[in-house]
Length: 108
Image (cartoon, rainbow, N blue to C red; front, side):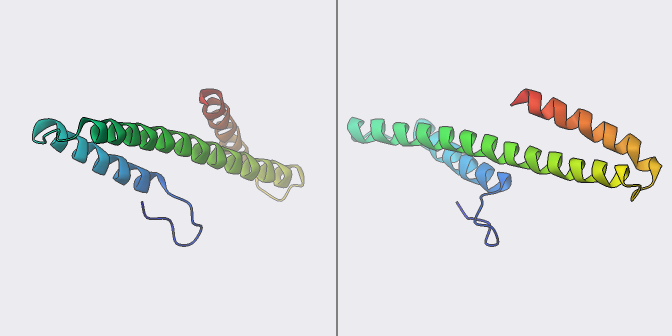
């Protein structure tokens, strides 16, 4: 997996690339491969399961981090609104954003 060179954090697209590669390898092994050593195959399957679980967990943490960032940005916008630093037409967008963040938070 290639890390984002700026932050050192894997992005969702990179996680998908790794999973796509793993799926392709598994597909080849299932359809055209031969099992030459059953113990090695058990280890390989275990590694793929660990990879998939790790990607799933990493993606959930990344999503939670992004939700937290959005919530903080929203809070800053609300503070600006309270200080009359932002025009009133943005209030509707803030309310919509709040609803989205609530929905996203409820899914995690």
